[in-house]
Amino acid sequence: MSHEVPAKPAWLKRRLPAGSGFEKVRALIDNCHLHTVCQEAKCPNIWECFSRQTATFLILGDRCTRNCRFCAVAQGPEKLPDPDEPEHVASAVHQLKLAYVVITSVTRDDLPDGGAHHFARTIQAVRNRCPKVGIEVLIPDFQGNHDAWQTILESRPDVINHNLETIQRLYPMVRPEADYSQSLDLIRYVADNNRNISTKSGLMLGLGETRKEVVTVFADLIQAGCHLLTLGQYLQPSKDHLPVARYVPPEEFNALKKKALEMGFSDVAADPFVRSSYRAKELFSGKS
Image (tube, rainbow, N blue to C red; front, side, top):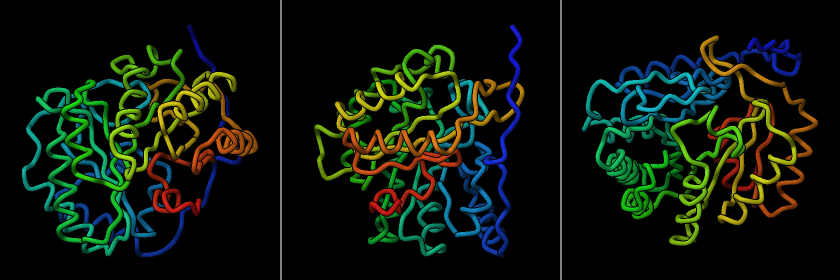
């Protein structure tokens, strides 16, 4: 069945920021043999974030074992994770003089622990090199492996983020290899087992969800113990990915942010250009 993609509205057009920061960050990432989700997932904020000398580091390689229909990251890992990657990330954080860093990964269902120990080693390497830096990790579900979840908890990041991405009804279409309830269980596990770690999740809008369904996700997240929330517009990375069902106007994002805060989230970032790690430090500190 054909799907007519709506024309991209004016509010999704933005000027690229000027400055030398972009090239500095790009060169540093290349020199340290690192990947960023900014590049691999074709994030629309890459120019802004790189120009502000910030980036979200992508560990465990640049290829994913899953085939989420919204994601631009390549599939099919070809090799084991680089054992030197944790130190490379720590070196980049130090050279960029970051006060806050976000570390995420591809999903590696081919690894016995899903890469949880590699995550923990990366967090520890950054802590050793930069003791005062704030650390947020955006993690996969590790196929529901509680030992893997505990490994992440014991590494003591400041924020554990796991995105639901969309409403439950759309999971078979958007995230066919993931499970809505399992993702909620991960957030609940973190909230129940370490109250010093902030919990965070995010949704893409514009995939065919209704407002009522979005508010139901808000309620599910609050019940699971989620503190922070991001809401952004889904953008189709290529013709091979899910089409956009609707472009959600900024005023709807504002209304949903107000609703989410009323329901009990500590803070919410909601805007067509928001992504799960966009201005993460400001959201964590309550200055979004």
